[in-house]
Image 1 (cartoon, rainbow, N blue to C red):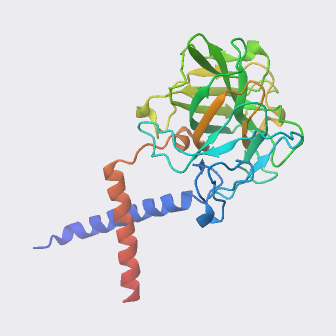
Image 2: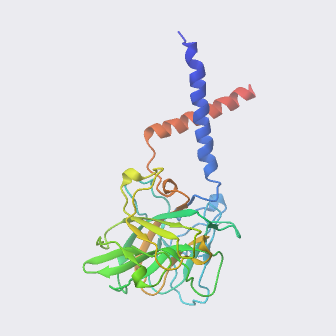
Image 3: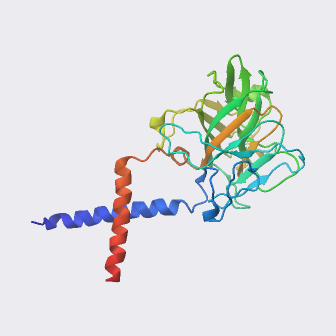
Length: 313
C-alpha cells in the first residue's frame, strides 16, 4: 500500500538533491575556487601536462595558463612536470601528475583572476598544496629561501617577481628542515617559522591565506597552516593557524592576482601537488566525500534524469 502522504516530502527531497547537484556542477565554472592537479586537460581545451615537460605554457581545465614570470632567465632549470602524486589522508584523492622544483631558474605564474579585476579591498584568498622536499642541497640554516606564494600581477615579465604574499619559506636545520612564511618581506625579522622538524621523507600539507585589509599599507595579514587536522577539512570556519605574519609592508596595491612557483637561489628539490586556490578554507581543503553525500548527489542526478524523461513522454 502506497503512503501518498510521503510523496510531497519525497518530491521536496528530490528537488533539494537536484539543486545540490546543480550547485556542484556549476561551481566548476566560477573563477575561484581553482584546482590544479597537473593532469591532462586536453579534453577541456587545455594541455597534456606531459611528464618531463615544463610547467610554463601548460593550460589547465580552468582555462588559466602558467606564464613565465622571469623571461630574462636563459638557463635550462624550470618547474617541470613529474610523474606521481602526493596524497594527504582525509583530503580528496590526488589526480594527474605533480611538479618538480629545485635550483636557480624560471618562475611559473598562474593567474586566477581576469585582467583588471584582482582580489583586494578586504578579500581573503587561500591556497593549499601537498609538498615534499626531497633534496636539501643549497638551502641555508639562517633565513632560508622562499619559493612559492601569491603575486599581484598577471602574464609574463623579465625580472623575477619581488611582491610575494604568504611566502612558503624553507630553511635547513639539523636533521632536516623547517617551514615558515612572511607576509611580503625578505627581512628575516619578519619571518615566522614553525619549530617542527621535517625530513625529506615527509609529505606535508600546506594551507596559506592572505587578507587584504584597507586601513593602511602595513595592515594585511598572512596565515599558514602546516598539516592541519583532517577533521577541519571542508569546515566553514578555519582552525587556528600554525603561523601568522603581519609585519613589514603589504603586497603592492594590496591585491592578489596570481600564484607563483619559483626556481631560485636556495630553492630545495621540492615536489608540489594538488594546488588549490579559493576564497574560503573549505574551498582549498575538500575532504573525501562521505557515502551519504555521494548518495545525495546520485539521488539528485536521478531526479533530474527522471524529470527529463517525463518531459519527453
